[in-house]
Image (cartoon, rainbow, N blue to C red; front, side, top):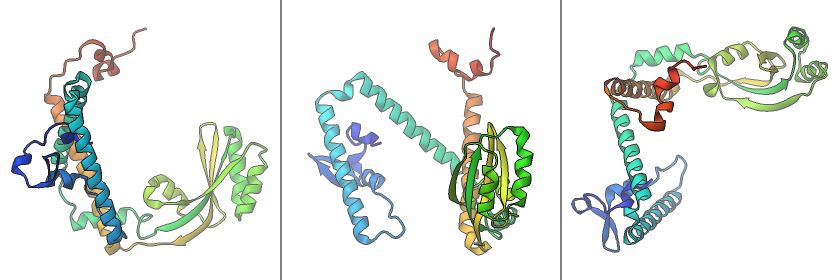
Length: 274
């Protein structure tokens, strides 16, 4: 959102202008905000094309903002409210970034501990292709299904065991991404070989995951350093923001007026009157 495009550029006269639109300067800082970051693998031609698109978009936004001011839209009550909301969002984000900046960088020992605590992500990482089958099965029949699946040694025999139930069967195949998978599920899949299945009871039936193919894809500690540091850093930034906002909430005096009272935190925690 180009908040600055809704009004003349504040401080533009003291900043180096990137270009001017009808004599109104657009600063290098404003230009930097819209320039895309080059993606890995992008050619120079692709980067230049993306930059041209960004500049063209900023020019169009500046022209539209000028036209809006000339039409008096900057004084329209709804527009004023939208500008105030955008300003509040930008300021809140800026403060959250300041809070996040207080997060401590992970140490080498902490990276080692994280690496050792997540073997399925790194040292014992596997690329696994799974078949997922979902059955609307009563809880009383799940144990019998597990027994049949234990005897199945291939994906085809697994499907035969599932069809015995005589219920609608929805199946799909997909590749498992260890980094995006809950640890509990990774732990359940870790000992399984090709053809073996994991039965996961769920509301209204069961979810059966069968290993179709698996291959080792271990990641060394050295290769994982940047990824681990990013994960730890991201979690610490999130917690720093949570702590900072919680402190503000404790110090603040918030008064709910009118209909907002029914949506307040106090109203949500109050017992329902019957």
